Length: 302
Image 1: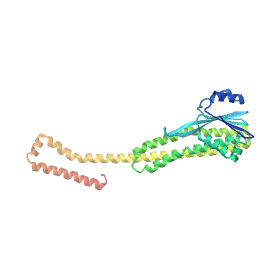
Image 2: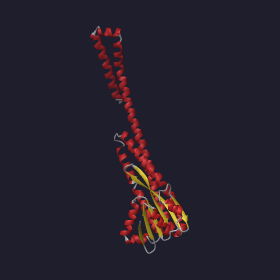
Image 3: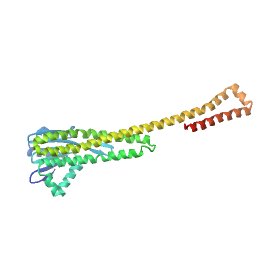
Image 4: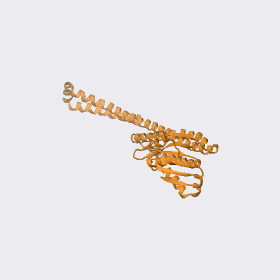
């Protein structure tokens, strides 16, 4: 548990809460027992709950997992009173650490962020939103790599990269989309709790989060366009290969016909009786094949 104070409010940060932490909160505040019990484990959904004496906020943020090659969900819970902001999370989170460093290293920022709980929540959530935007950089990098390689004849290899990128964007979107709804709900609940003067800050958070949504949608459209282009290139390459095999198969028909005729006893004996006749027919067949190859090359079929 980490506690920082100002003349006006306190911020309490709890990492990996246990029963002792929950008992501490029970003694210090009159939070609903069901809410306190929920803090011992992760929640499945994001939500804002209003009470005249406090706000309860469950916020999920996407974190890129390099081993899984996709984004996973992390959680921050907020318990907010008029004098305290309590954050609970279940792993070390970069935006929480960044906010903590700013308070420790920047007295001016600390005075602004801890002037009241509304400002504390604003700056904390803003830090999380900026972190969410940074988490999209790997998606941008993957799309750039795919764009650079798409016309280099690596269509089969790119199928896997595109699939991973699509899954990552989808997982990120599944995690992040409900947070936009949550922030819209926070505007209404926050105005009721803190007053009308906080609406501009809460609206700003919702507006900033819309940038995340826009980026996700842009990346989704881009990767779908790249997938379509790559599919068309792969299909064209496959058709070209099949065309060549078809032509090669056609070129073998004269030789196959000659071999079949030679295997018949009557014709075989007829050809064997005159070696000159055999070689004349063989040369004629070869000439037909070579002529067909030259013709196909002029047509651009080979």
